[in-house]
Length: 188
Image (cartoon, rainbow, N blue to C red; front, side, top):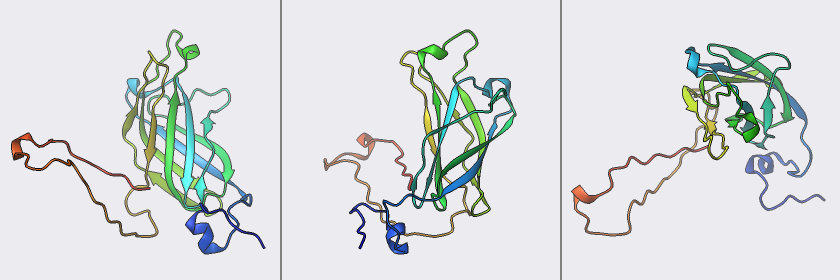
């Protein structure tokens, strides 16, 4: 009799799968569209990590041998193989800025207009929210990572969440002295 670890994913528990058993490989087609303006392109290395209801994929570099990727207005398509992640819930894109990259012409910033992932096993294309900048910290050699969620109307299951927000443990604050920030939350 096989037992599962305490932290096994609930979706796997529900399906009666062994959480430690290797999952079948799936091919994913990742299409990334760079913004149309000349300053939207990047020469940084770009990595992707897929996340699904069955777990997290590996961080993989997006590259087309011999082809310059992530140029202004381009749609770049990459084939990657990962374990079967189930229905995709999030895509993480990350740029890499290491000191060896800072040569003449290195442009680490990048504007991602769109990102789509085709799950070839399920024959399903998921479009992820984008329209954002990934920037670099050249001084510290750090890249930017962004997590994108599917666009509205693409989730197959609805869930209810109860969120409690605490903004201060002090009482008696006047309305004019309260923080004016706008809290937000992302749920994956």
